[in-house]
Amino acid sequence: MNSRANNRKAIVFTLVSMAAFSIEDAFIKHLSSTHSIAQILIVIGLASAIFFAILALKNGRTIWASGLWTRLTFTRMLAEAFAGVAFVTSLSLVPLSTVAAVFQILPLTVTMGAALCLGERVGWRGWAAIFIGFVGVLLIIKPGFEAFNPSVLLVLVAVFGIAVRDLVTRVIPVSVGSSIISFQAFSSVVVAGLVLLLVSPQVMTPITLEQWVYFGFTIVFSVSGYYAIVLAMRLGAASIVAPFRYSRLLFSLMIGVFIFKEQPDVLTLIGCGIIIVTGFYTYLREQRGLTKLGKNATVS
Image 1 (tube, rainbow, N blue to C red):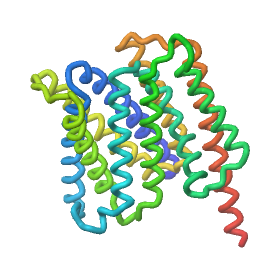
Image 2 (cartoon, helix red, strand yellow; image 1 turned 180 degrees about the vertical axis):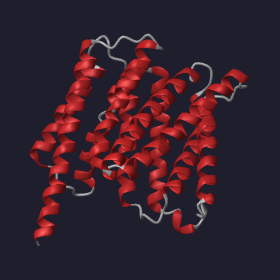
Image 3 (tube, one colour; image 1 turned 45 degrees about the vertical axis):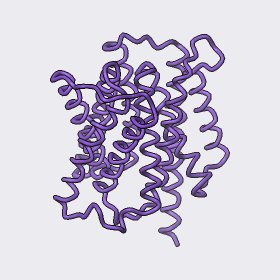
Image 4 (cartoon, rainbow, N blue to C red; image 1 turned 120 degrees about the vertical axis):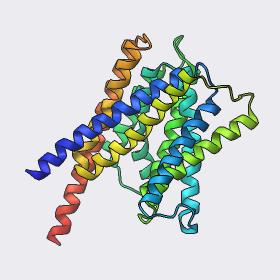
C-alpha cells in the first residue's frame, strides 16, 4: 500500500515538474522579446546557481573541493552550457509547441548515444524505433518544404548537448551530489552568457520591475521543476515515472495554442505521435530487458 501511495505521489510530482518546465519555457520566450539571450542566461543561471550552492552548503557539502571538479564534471558543464545557449535561442525564434515537440526526441537520442558511446545493447528493434522516431522529427521540422524554419535546428543542437550531458552524468561518481552537479550546471550557463556578451553584439539592458517579476517566476519554475522531478525519482519506480515525462509536450502545446496563439499543423501532430510511440516502445523494451536481467541474476 505504501509503495502504491509513493508511486501516486511520484506521478503527481512528475506532472508538476513537467508543467513547471513548460511554464518556465513560456516565460523565457516572453523575456527573449525584450532581453538578449546572454542576459537571460546570466540572470537565470546566477540565481539558480546561488540557490543550489546554498542547498549544497546546507546539506554539509563543500562545493569547491578539487575532487568535485574533474574532467567528467567539466565535460558535463560544457554540454550544459552548449545546450542552454541553443535551447534558449530556439525558444526566442521558434514556436513553443514546435520546440517542445522536437525536444521529445531526447530519450531516443540518449538511447542511441548509450549504444554508440557506452556499449549498451540496443538491438535491431531498438535501432528501428530510433530511426522511426527521427522520421517523426523530420515531419515536424519539414526540411525542404516552404514551412521549414532553419532555426528549429537549434532544438536538435540542444537535444545533442543534453544527451551528452545525461550520458556523462551516468558515469560521474555518486559521491558528487545532485546539488553540486546542479550548481555546476547553472554556473556553466552563466559563463556561457558572459561569453556571448564578449563574442556577439548582444548587450545587457535595464530590467524594469515588471520584467524582474517575469525573471523571478522563470527562476521559481526552473528550480521547482527540478526539485519536483528529483522527488518523483526518489519516491516512485522509474517505470512509473518515466512515461509521464511526455506530459511536458501536452503542457507546452496548450501554452503555445492558448497563450502564444500558435497553430500546430497536421504533420507536426503526426510527428509528435510518432516520437511518443517510439519513445514508449524503447522504454518498455529497456524495462523488459532489465526484468530479464534481474531474473537471470536471481537464478544464478
